[in-house]
Amino acid sequence: MSSKIPWSPSSWTSKSVAQDVEYPDRQHLSKVLSKLGTLPPLVTPSEIERLRYQLSLVQRNEAFLLHAGDCAESFDACTNENISAKIGLILSFSLILIWGARLPIVRVGRIAGQYAKPRSSKTEKVGDREVLSFRGDNVNGLDIEDRTPDPERLLRAYFHSATTLNYVRGLLTSGFASLHQPRDWSLSHVRSPSLRNEFEDIVEGLTDALDFSRTIGQESGASFEHGGARSTVGEVDFYTSHEGLMLDYEQALTRECPVPKTVSSVPNETAYYNTSAHFLWIGDRTRQIDGGHVEYFRGIRNPIGIKVGPSMENDELVRLLDIVNPDKISGRVTLITRYGAGKVENYLAAHIKAVKESQHPVVWVCDPMHGNTLTSSTGLKTRHFHTIIQELTSCIRIHSECGSRLGGVSLEFTGELNDEGFSVTECLGGSMELSEEQLGLRYQSFCDPRLNFEQSLDVAFLISKHYKDERRGKQRGNEKDVLFTELSVLPSK
Image 1 (cartoon, helix red, strand yellow):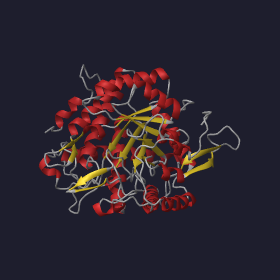
Image 2 (cartoon, rainbow, N blue to C red):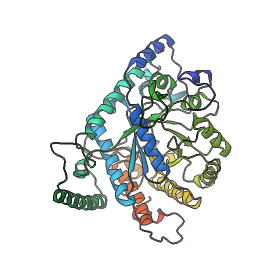
Image 3 (cartoon, one colour):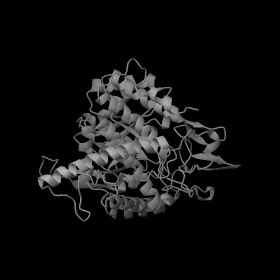
Image 4 (tube, rainbow, N blue to C red):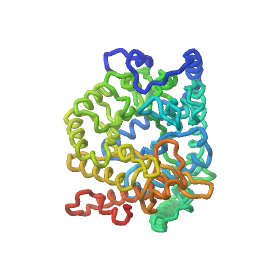
């Protein structure tokens, strides 16, 4: 960080802090934070620097970013089944994208730390009682008798994050991600024959390509994996992320570390890394220019995300970039736009223009989820697949018209199954034609609605087909949205 304004991991405490949690026992909080400050880092500077480099490739259109996972994790969902399902879905989604776009995929999961959520109100009405709002498992409990913020939950969040990350790393180094066996990522429960067939077509093509490569390698005497040895097709890079909402927690896990010599030209250079995750983002509710979150984020060396919504003014966006990335370093900032299908036309082009004129290097990512939440007639929060795709396709088109390019997507999805082996039912539409009557059957999220396995693959195939057509130079006429006609195969009711 080259800014001349002094910074320290605690300098945010001199600013106003949006969405702050009020702990009744501050002495207990201090004790917990001191303990967190002594615990080992969850991620390393080398991993963080590797992600920064890969995001610079996304910014240069040499890779594509997939940012995906739960709206909010729960401690109870920290099981081998749920984690395996989530990683399997991310791998399946990215394989489909690779096949169509022929670009490396940078995989960043909303996992191993996404336990806190902002709220529009400090309290909520439950029956005839007004109680503190549920802020996520690292703050308080979903049960109305457990709404008092408890510092011990921060320690539980650390250990659940460590457990999750340990299992993810174990999966990815034990052949789970091997391209030799993508069928092991489980499509057996997918009820859509067309989705299953499309995925199987990709697997067949991939298998043929790998068999050919293996044969050529054998002919040339090349070495192949033996006994579970690591190889480029047997492992993938995978990174963790969460919203940097709880600044006390983030400060406790911020460490001054040597910058890896592979990326530093300064002898004995050190920097502050947030070691709770590889990637953190500032939410739409906490991006105040003079606020504590922006102050904290400007000083860490991690790549960061900034949510950009309809309330973001053009000059405000540029000022924000000037603060968090004064040296205009590639791979440092990812802008995650979340307008809503009905508003993207009014804001995105102006934001792109402002950033281009500022000459700030950014990765542009579309979050088509958060601006498209609605309440069903049965009272459940939901989203419609049709509007999710509408915002995504509009983003792709507007970027193209502005001489820019969409670098990735940010999705809330889940590979979770219920006890009967069926996908969750939280969003409407998609190839399975989920209706309002079906929402309550397997609604499992305690926060925002997520795309299920089939709906997620629907999105993957649509994006993949777009980039495949673009790659092949196919002319698509004067269609308003480059992907929108593909929706003809997906029921919108």
